[in-house]
Length: 339
Ligand SMILES: [Fe+2]
Image (cartoon, rainbow, N blue to C red; front, side, top):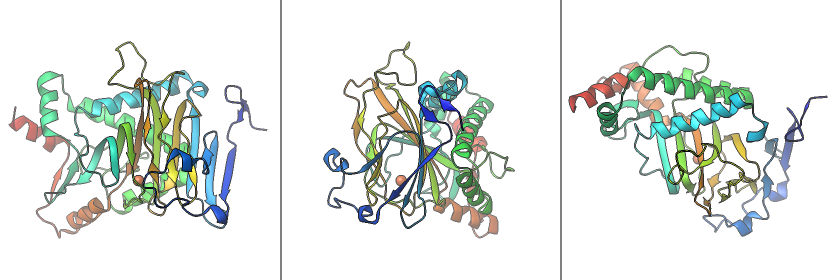
């Protein structure tokens, strides 16, 4: 008999299966671009424990785990806190993404490696202007930056391996088979280590929501995670990072409309970790808000882009001889020219 966790009354390690009946394998309101909270009432709401979702007659496409803060050790809490602070810090180096197709509101940032949309190059996301500012006004140290990125990406990698080791392996296979840079690497090419699995991540805040869509990344499965936090725009300095019992966000659910399934992120005060088949199934983040404005939610997901995979192939095969690779060193050089 597995141990019962006294704080949550759940049996550790137990996984619940939700098999979507054939009659519920359709979008009940295709005309609604943003599924209303009214329509959501007929959805199956997942909000506790560990759950795997599959159509009754098909392959599973989602595994989700709701982890209450109160079930975590002080070290685990600190790990999540540190990750949130890392994301806050990264906004000092990368610009918010201006045009992400399905995004409708909120803020999104990207960090790690991508193919440049303008030039024939791939490199780390970096705002030279922001980097310059960090060099002028703080003790910018490229080694510290690299260490912080490595620690955050290792932490995420370990969470993914615990939740879904098979998904970790399939991510890693795409990374290695395509010779892609890992998000924890500051230059390219470098040898992989045991925790490398994806090239970049995006993170969102401030009531981010988007329209129904499928992803077009190189990875079949995507890791997504949500963390309830105090709103950094309204929080005072002495407030904690992770949200407390006062957390009052409404909405913001993550849905699979063709299966009438939603991940309800408001029932458990804690972290929600999820892997799902992002290319095959339409998904959507619904609008949400904290009436007190004291809270928000940070969401992040890890990817590898197809555009970059193609650029890397061309680079390696020598069919793109002028293609530039811009790791940390190059970005620092670019900024230094403007100092
Ligand atoms: Fe998506």
